[in-house]
Amino acid sequence: MQNKIKTVQQHILDEERMHPGATGDFTALLTTLTLAAKIISREVNKAGLVKILGETGEVNVHGEAVQKLDEFAQQTVCRAMGHNGHLCVMASEEAQNIIPIPDGSTRGKYVLMFDPLDGSSNIDVNACIGTIFSIHHKITKDHEDGSLEDCLQKGSDQIGAGYFIYGSSTMMVYTTGNGVHGFTLDPSLGEFLLSHENIRTPARGKIYSINEGNMHFWDAGTRRYIEHLKEDRKDRGHPYSLRYIGSLVADFHRNLLKGGIFLYPGPKGKLRLLYEASPLAMIVEQAGGAASTGEQRILDIQPTSLHERVPLIIGSREDVEQYNQFYKEAQKSAAD
Ligand code: AHG
Ligand code: MN
Ligand code: MN
Image (tube, rainbow, N blue to C red; front, side, top):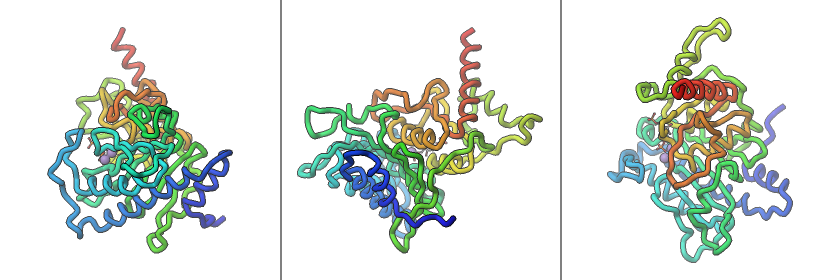
């Protein structure tokens, strides 16, 4: 059966109608976000021509060189979202503190946290990059402005999560808790059209994604697990294949569709909980997969700071569960 022709706005509206008393605010919020993504996508697709490649010369809160496109994406999301009247506060990888809603703009009931450009190290080599977002309800009651407390919520309390991926085509993948749906941008229409309805990730994959250059920093459980994947075992056939682009969104998206496991293990991990791990964890669980630190479910973690990092093991459920076993057994034998 041919794909129905449906824009992401229509899809979001249909989903919102399933929630009694829905006001359409959430649809307006996500629609504005797609506008920001279209602008970022346009710049990404011509970055090499408009002197927007390279570094700004600044360093962000994580000590990472800020790319011009990072800054462009950050400004684009803030300028589009700050005035849409549905947010009480924002937080971004590229801003040390929470981002208040500009004076004079209406405050709303939602919180938006985002990684404006994920995979920055790949920007000037034309590899796949993306934008990741997480949406919560405002929980503080004392005044209309959101606060840090509104940002530091568990991933299990997200009301929406998604990402845009700027690759051979630009796609939006999101969930509001009713499955995971993918939309592909038709640049000639300027619309994201439904292309991947109700994405389900395979229970087990044949791909693993990890930066093997960090091998000497891995814990014993991770080392044993990766060695296990490389064995040519009778019970499993050929070993897994390593695929690692170095952009979380790209590695995650490929494994979501094909099956597989992405690992950025501890001890502390590099990836940030609020706007990388949590939103992707909501998506992968909604698609039938799993996301853990090795010890606990990502969505159960109570955040304590805006930019806190976590180990991230995410993808096909059986692969993640097997990793967790290796990790826990190694922890146990180290303790004995
Ligand atoms: P960002 O560009 O938003 O800082 O994210 C980069 C992250 C993530 O996209 C990717 O999975 C990871 O960094 C790659 O890290 P290594 O280069 O250490 O493998
Ligand atoms: Mn990132
Ligand atoms: Mn980033």
